[in-house]
Image 1 (cartoon, rainbow, N blue to C red):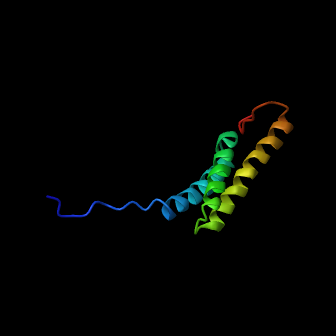
Image 2: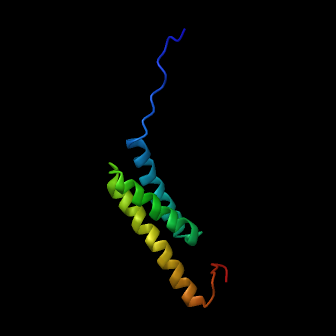
Image 3: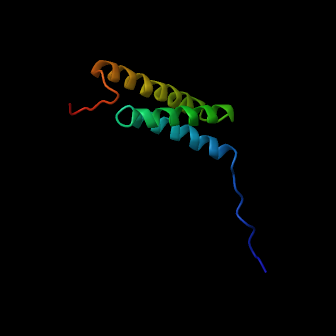
Length: 90
C-alpha cells in the first residue's frame, strides 16, 4: 500500500531553464578553453531553449552569442597562428 503520491516530473519549463543556463556557462567557459567543442554545444543548447520558449530568454541569447564568439575567436587565433590549433603558452 502506497501512502504518498509518486513524485511529479516537471520536464517542460525546468528543462528549458537548465538548457539556457548551460548554454551561457558553456559559452563563457568556451571563451577560455575548448572553443571548438564548447561553442557549438552552447549554440545548440541556446537554440533548443529558445525554440521551447524558455523563461530565461536573455540568458539563452547570451549563451548563443557567446557560442558564436567562441567559434569566431578560435577562427581568428587559428588564422593569426597559421595552424589548426592554438595555445596560450606559445
